Length: 100
Image (cartoon, rainbow, N blue to C red; front, side, top):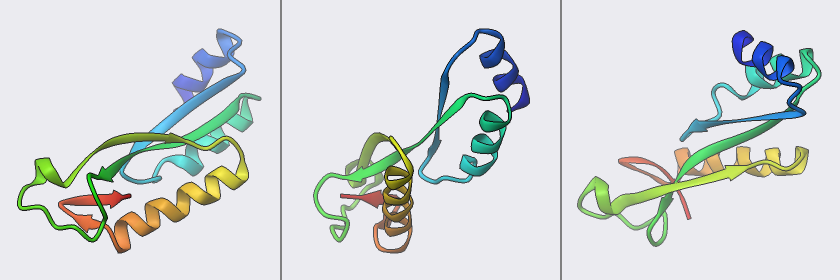
């Protein structure tokens, strides 16, 4: 993370985005590192989107979900992202944590 932020600052980038895959495990560390060097952190998640409803239970992993990238615009967006990822893990788990 330090190397990424050092390079972003070196190139005078105003913002950097990071997406975790199916979770938000790295969001806090990323946010703190970006803020420390004065870069706007854009937090996101590459979620798994159910083809239908998260209550559907397809017979194989390929039919269970596809990838969908979400970026939080602001604090409200981040809170919504947290809710979606939590729902994916608690209610949408079928091969992967899915949203709909």
